[in-house]
Length: 404
Image (tube, rainbow, N blue to C red):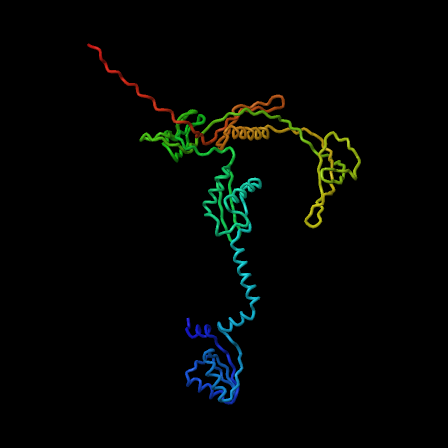
């Protein structure tokens, strides 16, 4: 930083215009006296220059002696700034008050947003956050650590599996994830993984414990797959996936003839004036005598600005339907039967799986129905938890005390 400029700002500087015949003589004499002049620009009987306030006495005496007039163009530096501030006390006070208010308001939480959970749970999260010190109007400097607030909210709401808190400026963002109902928490006590059903092993992934089966091995329900008993005698909660080939047999029956409703083209229309749950018919008094019918309802959405009016016009169209029987071919019926069998197998699996193959074992068409016995081969995870059985006690052998 230039020290001369610092001095000029601290003590003040004057940007002046000199006018008169003796301007060149004034500048020469000031330079002889050691007065520092900056930004000197000479003209015809005039000059502009910048000098410090502390040197103004010498400039004034030399200009007076040579009968040169002085006009101030600009006054800069701290002394003149302080003088201006003293003249505008109200303005400066208002500016300082504004800065103070902006600073204080930026230190307050003005909005708390909650994402990831439904509205009823969001209300509980907002209440738990307020009890933990995070609420609209809270001072940012007095907030506890974010990790502590997250842990406190999760402690107050055990139905949440994860909570994240992030404060950006004056807005606090809370993200939460609810526990999925029906999903069991991870068990910490030691246990084995056994087969849930008979199958042929295809792949074994043991993330914890010792796998005791190999691909290609046939297992029965309840057979040990992954042992929680390690070689050193330590017991751990066994974990892993055992994908195996499982076989299902489904009995499917479906009619060859299906009744469908087709529209004849005839219709009548009715109009209602709806006020909340109350509907008053205003047009269409004809009562059709259709054996079967299909209704379609259309309703207006009248608004005034953003407000939806409570009175709306509802139009109901009644179409005549004619039921007719549609005969399916054997190929179409078989395709539908395989689809029904696949759905039955997925229901029996109760989880994720891949259908590998489907075969029809028996087929019979009788009395307008198709009867099929379908064999389905799937790959699914057959692993399920089971307690570790207690170790068998060793029988002690009594010493032989008899005489020979």
